[in-house]
Image 1 (spheres, rainbow, N blue to C red):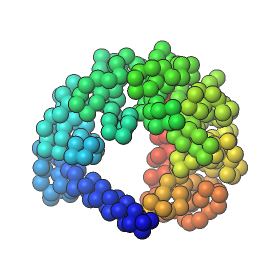
Image 2: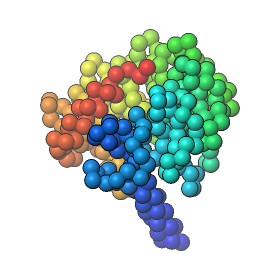
Image 3: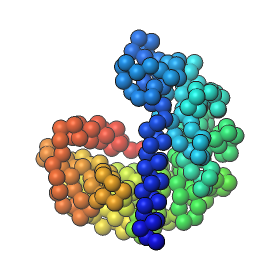
Length: 300
């Protein structure tokens, strides 16, 4: 039975990968500087969705045959399907990608008249556009929660727009799992820490920067140096790295999570025990340095 289940899962993952690979890919017309979509990104490949957008994002596979990509035209954002048909009117100042709020329903953050809310795949507004900022919904033991900002204070709402964790923090990021429960990075009195899904601070606000948990560990910075902690704030190494990238599985689904770090101008991979396991090539190092410059800033 286990073998049949594993074979079925492998087949499903292969089908999902094939479906994603077959979706049109965004590319720019080098003459007009406008974006459209091709079967694959290559200068000689023809556009199958004309290059008429100021910006275009990759397609997402949502509910079975439903696909959506955010595009910008005449200064406004909306969504198209893989045939190039507009499925959500181009009327927003900014949009984000779709994410789950349950097993069969997806929502995307949108900005209209200077305020943020969420819409469903049919374009219906399900969370009122009244927030200064929002971050995507993520699953917790208390249901799906999203970080929102009102009057420069952050809290968390559920999909019914009930304020589950009151707006009280200087900044916040989304929930993700640790080994001991869900955690979200929050900022108080200029320092970062973590709360659980009921809003209790479970890791003290003592860090200069803190990222979301990834593969059950979070990158944190103190006195200019980085390390990774678990859900109980236990570091895997001293604070010693100059730059880091979150842990991720870089091969098959059962591969070992690895993080890229830079120390003393040398880049290498570490495992979740903090041990060096491999060197990093120059392209990976350049990507990490770019990521670090982007992500090491406090979230606003």
